[in-house]
Image: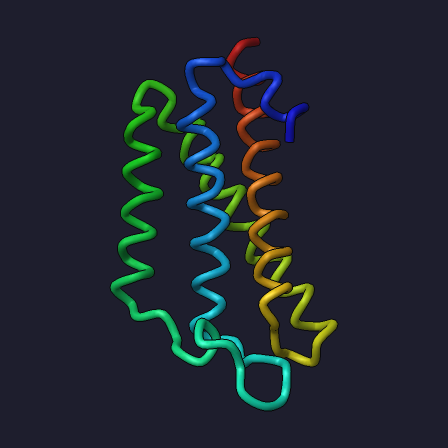
Length: 132
């Protein structure tokens, strides 16, 4: 992650990190709504109760607000958000194939981490492309 942040302007660190985290978590929460829990027995309280649509909407609004906060670099912010969401979704999809179509808490943690790193790499690529 440090290598990805190297090319991000210092004034954009906080916004970039917040956007990467929010976007990656949104991708994971969307899956939590539709993917069954893999372990037999009583799942954790978070997995037992599917997040309401209002939670998904609030997280999406947060991602959109973070993108808009970096208005001069709106295209870069949108790319970072989409990169994080896409990679978190891909990580969950891959994990589900390994777990017979279901997921566990560690799967969501894996997806969020992959999504955050992907978003930061997208930010680095977008910043580098913008500088050239």
